[in-house]
Amino acid sequence: EAENFDGLTPAPDGHTWTIGTDRAGFSGTGHLQALPNSGVNQNVNPDLLTQSPRLDYNVKFVKSGTHYIWILGGDPDAAGAGDSVNAGINGVNPPTALRIDGTPGFNIAAGWNWVGNIQGDTRATIEVPSAANHVVNIWMREDGFYFDKLIITSDASYTPTGTGPAESVRTGGTPPAPTLSLARTGTGVSITFTGTLQSAGSITGPWTDESAAKSPFAVTPS
Image: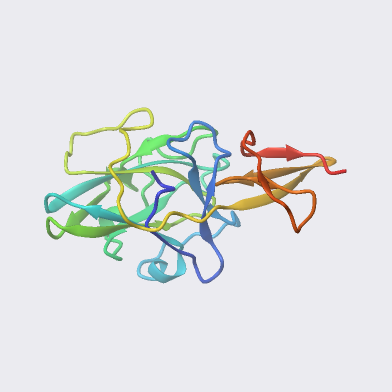
């Protein structure tokens, strides 16, 4: 699951991967989006390694050699301006995992597509150097991109469907921090969050869990 990363490195310009639940049909507890969605495209290697926000996933590989990447993702506006992503291993983005946006593409108005090809419709792959622990990386290419799930497989003939297989067992790593954002909706406020939402009558508390609250949560201030 994209949201269960082991490391997140924001970009120097402030772009980062943000947890959300606004795009329906996601797998797991949420999805990630590269924000802000301001039209930035990090498409030059090696500059993107340090100028693009990066996600790290610790993976215990049982064999070396070629492994195939599948990404479950989507374009925020179905306009082609947020429909690609980069992948790699151990901090290196190989040409075989640069610009993952091949057929059928992420450029859809709603929902999610599985894409396992780079531009030109050759397979997105990484080379695993040994049967051991390695770090798989995901870098933003176009901001606004929605990222829901990652599959790494040594089976060239495998093609995922639906929301894909259940998540592999996850051990170690640091859970992602809860997120919170506010937006006006007419005379009310919409609260988008991960984690547990709490409320209080004053800033000093006492604070109690809003156990029935689901993100986004609508509030009408008095």
